[in-house]
Length: 264
Image (cartoon, rainbow, N blue to C red; front, side, top):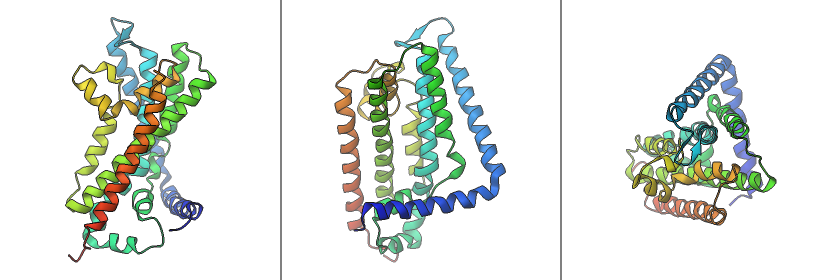
């Protein structure tokens, strides 16, 4: 297997090629940016409906909910830019034999299949989302300590790993099922459920979203940034993320062992 630095360079080459190609259509890039900003502002304005007659909902103030919404848009933008384009191609890889070709490359097949393609039009979505998060923190009046910022970055990294693990699991299913065009909707639904704090859902939905674990995507990172996170979650989140990645990798390898090729 190639060293990690070389694999990172190869992915970088793929991404630069994607950026170069997409920048030939700058209008599409700018139009998508404007559309993303509109939907984010629409979501932020829509959240105000919940606070029309109350200052808090399930223990969250309106600015604190904006922090969560901002994180949702940031993570969903990352999913659309990096994970979704590769997931959408997986069934085609299996049917046309492209997967057979990719497996012969001197490169980690999981990384190549899951991260090769990049949708440049959504690259600014994470920036927009994090901007709304910063605005929400400022409006909340809470000071952000160095410890809170470090905890937030740790949990945000765990959230990204969870999304990646789900994408690999869905790709593994696509290898086995072949007809997996609808699997992308599972990824969308998983992230969509994190649009609001899980406390705003009623039980048993709240308990399910904590176990699944949707709460680790936006609710817990937002709580860490706002200084309201239970300390034990700083240990639990990395364990959950690492476990998810390991499980996803094992499922991927198992799916490849059962893969007989496009001609089978």
